[in-house]
Length: 324
Image (tube, rainbow, N blue to C red; front, side, top):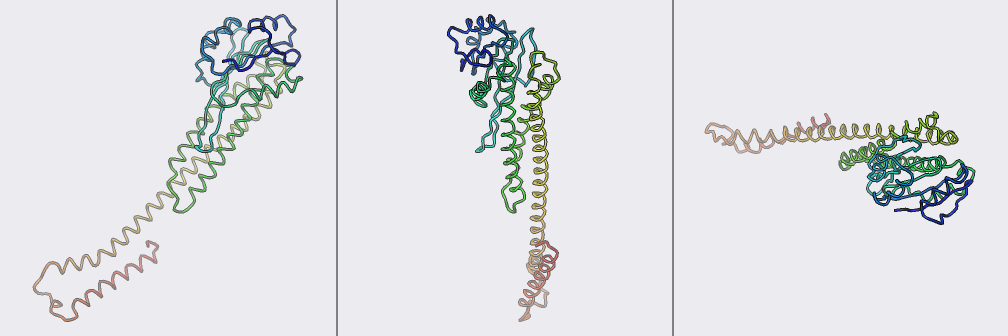
């Protein structure tokens, strides 16, 4: 559905009086500083049909915009630029990252933004842009910059939230007698990999713009350079998060192995202690006739004393050796 639509002249917003077709016709009749921005949220093919016919958008790009599930990319179709961004939203309660998408069709006198998912609504972006007429006067490229800037800034927020969860996991790993957090580490590692799949392919896209390979962005290359710097910083954070999780998992598995070895040593130590009375009792259970101590008054007390003494000696030696 259409969330918002407006026509901009000289960096100022003007409401649309007619339908979308009238707005595009008016933008084409005006000077170069006039363009239309239409924002849609999860449109159907039928809802997008009018815009496709009006702007003669490429069917492959339209199919991508309607169906979503695309990697970040930038494609050129004649005089139209098609760009895909991944949006992220982090849930503290579940440590899960929700991934959405923003597709943008960009021309000399129009911007069509198509958003999928609940993350990164574009209303605040539009409001901030309209408060900066000088930036908005750069035309459709300024809109794309503002959206990229918002998305990448939110990447930084998500990266910080992930870092907080990693710190909590590290504390749990090195806390004695804590529960097994292997599943939690793997779960967060999966979210970090999903994070990387969203932000990493965007780097070459912004590099194309910064290097001047897409003419429509020539007037805003400096702005995109700043966005690229922020994205590279986030990319470094994501790499660091992945390494931290690998280290945490390695340390956790090593500690689990150490704990298991300690448990086995204790079990083996008690088995050695119990083996003494078991062996002696087994000998006496054979019912031999010629055992002198059977008729001694102190025979059994002496045997029991020997059993306890040997068990105590073994216990002391094992305790000193750190097995108990």
